[in-house]
Each structure stands twice: as structure tokens, then as C-alpha cells.
Image (cartoon, rainbow, N blue to C red; front, side):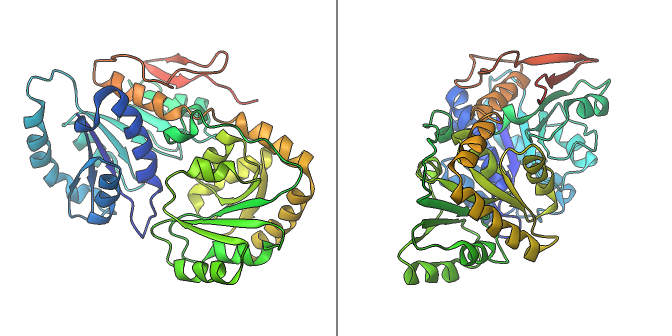
Length: 383
């Protein structure tokens, strides 16, 4: 049984849950949906998992106090075990939350092998597998953290868990003129950053496609733009995001998984961070000149907005700049990360089964390599 502990609600957005859903979809290719169950703190989170066709169990707890939910896990594990009679494989629990503690993860270990999705690489967690798919993540840092531990480490952007629609989608062909621009700032955009960016970049000869999530608190304000301007389109809960991105010439985006989605398609973009956990990736994008970097909104909104406007003008005016960014972006991810993570979770059960489609590496010398002491790390080194 594969148990996925993740939440997505109006307070924290849907990012954690969405990346776990991408992994779950890849898992279905080997185990089907009936052996995957999402464990969520609240109804809001569980409903999102259910909308994607997965069973969900609601704990009715505070997502910020994960140790308080541990008493519920005993009964939960027992009820799910009744469906697994005759199975000799280990349960696998994938946890994705910034609220986990060592005590919590150790307790989960009583019910199966534990994999943790995390973003920082500053602490050695008591788990069987750690996944950090962020491009700036340092394999050597993880090797030192987990030296002597029997922990499998999946580190680097080849493990970015993108939805299947991004795996084989046609790569962007950069056009001379910018005719369509995507704006996406995350579902929880409490400051209406999308609206403020739109106000500063709106041009009559360009169509702006603004994507909002289910938790966007300013949806009505954004819809007003659509009613007033013929060249503004507002989207809510887009199902074919790859298709929408594919018709755009440029994107203005907050940090997070959207950066990797755009990169898989080679869509030129300008990014910014609006939370601490986005800083490393967006700053890396700027330092490596992968794409445009406008700054940290949560530290200086005015300066970030000014730089966004300036960069927008530069990108619109230079097809060569956009072509260079498109090429560099595609070097970050090939869209097959979900399959690789799913394959690793399969191996944790003790039964590797057949390789999951799309889990193989598409680049030279790209495989898992022993780092000694039972530690396994992604051997990719950034250029």
C-alpha cells in the first residue's frame, strides 16, 4: 500500500499536494489507483485528492501539529491493512510537509518505509528515502548529512515530479514576436500579485493569460480585468496546463513547480519569489542566467515589480534572449521526474516490479551511484 501524507488548502496553497499527485499518477502505471491512499488533515485537502480519482482519508487534525495526529494512525493503518491480506510487500509512506518532526517520522516508521519530500537539505531526517528535486540542491551536502545512514537520496532536478502532460509535450518554438503571455502567481496569492503584475505589463498587442488556483482570494478582481479588457483571459483550475503554456511566448511566474513545468517545455520566463522557500530556486535561476529573475517580492515588492516591468520589456523586445533562455531551461528537467520518484518508491516495497514508463534517464551518465555507507545520491553534477 502507498500512503501519501500531504495537505493543500487555502492557507498553504496546493503545491505540496499537487506534486504528490504527480507522483501518485506515475505510480498508478504499476500498482493502479486502488493501492494508493492520500492521508490529509482536512476535508479541503482530501477533496483535491479525490477530484484526481484517489481515495483519501481525513484525519480531522491541524496540519501544523503533525505529532498530534499520530494516535489516529494506528486505527488507520489497521483498517487499510485489512485490504492488503496476502501482500508481503512493505507499506510505503510518502510525507510532504514542512511541519514534520523527527518524532513524527520515527512513529510513521512503525507502519511502513518512509520517504520524505523536502526542500532545504539542512537536517538529517530518520527516513528511508529523501527527495529534494530542486535545481540548487547540492548532492555533496546531502551525502555529508546522511553519511553512515541507510537512506536513499534522490537529489536534483531530474526528480522534479511533473504531471504526465509535460513528459512528451511538444517543446516551445520561440517566435519573433510575443503575442501571448502567461501570468501565474500561485493559488494562495493573498496580495493579488497577479493583478499588480498585469497592471504594470498590460499591452494592447499582447494577449495575457492569467492562471489562478482554487484558493486565490482575489478571483473576482481578476475577472473584472477580463470584463474590461479584450486581451485578458482569466483561468481557474486549468486541467491542460501544458497546452496553455505551449501557446504562450513568455511567462511571468512565482517560484515553485511552475518554473520546472515551463522549463520542461522551454517557455521563456521571468520569475520572482514571494516566500522564503522559493528564494533558493529563483535566485539560482538568476545566477545561472537560466531565465529572468525579478527579485524577492516578500522582501521588496516595489523593487521586484519595477524589475519585472523592465525585464518584461527586454524579453518582449528580444527573440534572441528568449531563445537563449529556452535552451538553458530545457537543461534543467526532461519532465520524467515523477516516474523516477515512483520507481524509487516501488523499490522501497521490496518488490521493484517493471520499470515505470518515463523513469529512465535521457542524458548521458545520469544514474544513481553509491556514495558509500549505504547512501545513494543522484550523480548529476551541474555545469
